[in-house]
Amino acid sequence: MRTFRFNGFLFDFGPHVFRSNDEKVLAFAKDLLCGNYHRISSNPAIFKYGKVFDNVIPVITFRNIEGLPKDVREKAERELRGLRRPIKGLDLENFETCIISQIGETLYWEFFGEYSKKWWGVDPKKLSSDIAPKNLVIGCEKSYAHITTNFERPSEEIYPTRGGIFEIAKRLKERLEVLGATILTNSVVKALEYDGDEISKIVVKRAEEEVEIEARGKLVVSTIPLTSLCNMLKVENDLTYRGDICVFVKLKGTKMLEYSWMYFHDSNVVFSRVYEPLYYSENNSPKGYTSLCVEVTCFENDVYWKDKYLGEKVVEQLTDLNIVKKSQEPEVLRLEKYAHAYPIYVVGYKERLERVFSKLRSFKNLKVIGRTGAFSYLNMGECLKWALY
Image 1 (spheres, rainbow, N blue to C red):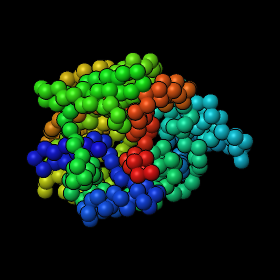
Image 2 (cartoon, helix red, strand yellow):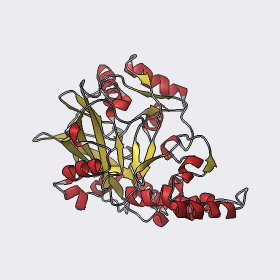
Image 3 (cartoon, rainbow, N blue to C red):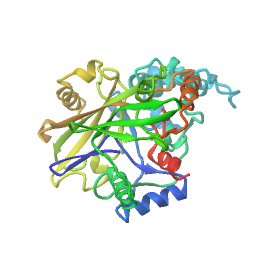
């Protein structure tokens, strides 16, 4: 939920909208923001074959099928006619089989397979069907749903009018401090010490100073990456996160995109997703300018992670695809990297998680929560719901 600021430009780390179908959670977030919010609608799109396609969850529009190359379209239509209706049942063996059983191989690859392989860096056959939509249909009207909405249409979506998505966390921090909480920011948990079945000490590094926090007799709530927690407590695990690099690009001009974000499926394009901060709030860029946040998914220390020319490559491809014009004088302001952005749900991940948690439960004063901490693909509303309930 971080928001980065550069001379009047605000960038969230990837596109963020606060949404929940729970009225209590929504009311809590609105109360935190004290009126500093407005309603917004997620309206994603797909860019491929040099043009824009509609979002495909849960509806794959006729317009999308018609926009495919002739040979691809005809193959997809033959497969759709061959699928029996109603579907006998979903094939839940893995991500790929789940979607193919609904829409056939061609539409699967065109709108799900190629992108998923690029986004996750894993063969979709090895991904769990838990992250696959199970209600796909062919229809006229585009719509938006996603794993982070439990594949349901969100009832209401909001975004801070000023300050970016970080305003929610900032206001929460302020209220906690009023209640007497001490919050250490820009700090790194270096170690957890334990005595038998109890976490006894937390070692935190802040700037050049190490701070030791006594934990005996206290509840320790962890949201740090689960793999890091396991390493500190010497708990074996074989879990993996997908990293994300955000390239922040400054541009001359006015708002460009009518979409909340755009997916780029082509494996030859280094980036996977692009959003324009001005879509979210007119206060996210100075007058006379706009900007883009361009996401490159990767693994920590892979070729993208180490590429010192990644920003320049992103701008070059944005220009080649005619998303950005040279006359806009694109300038890379900064690259931000996060190695634990997305927990990767491979086939059998639940069993792997249970083995980890069965060992962590042996620590009587440890509670593990949150998206990164619990290795759970949650959105902001769900994280807040965990806390409230």
